[in-house]
Length: 146
Image (cartoon, rainbow, N blue to C red; front, side):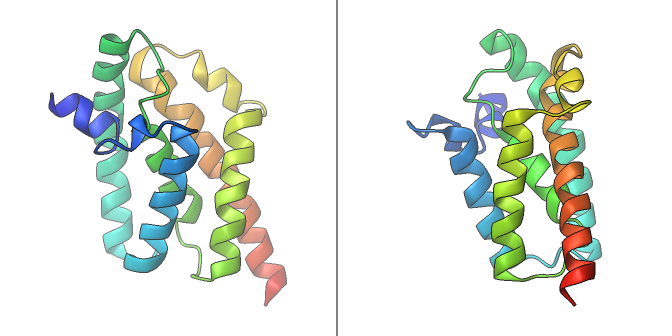
């Protein structure tokens, strides 16, 4: 039962329309309102989410028969990676949300290759890579925005 709760991000994965997008939006909003992506607290939460996410995705993947739409902890991890060390700004966070969804949906190389890995690794790493791409683009935007 705990795997299901964590894997679906406390039920967000059951949202009837686009559960991954819904979860990404909620996590983005929570990060913006509650956390500083440049803080040690953020880094610790991200590390715990990544570690927990691999185990949870592995277990929920077995139970659901693969990367089911209800499994959204990987989206949460990807969004956390997207904003790591990024300064807070509504425009940057809005851009980050949309960039992450684009990278997650289009899966440019090597994002798509990550999906082919077995178990929780494949479920998690494509979203983590989409988050890395998003973070790189956001970092570049932040440099030129100033």
